[in-house]
Image (cartoon, rainbow, N blue to C red):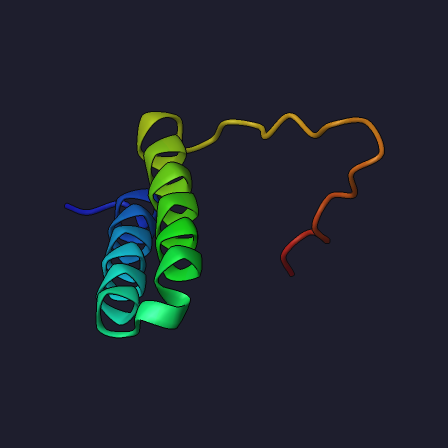
Length: 68
């Protein structure tokens, strides 16, 4: 059975692949799309490794509002 965290990680990986594909087809935005893809991959990895982990925020950074 797939958990919500596993599904979310898979969706993030799919989004990363989408960004890479868009970048590969559009040279002017390739670097930006690959940067986006790398962020999605990193978050997917965090989620897969520790689904209930807490993100350490740098001083001065604001947290996202809690989900309702």
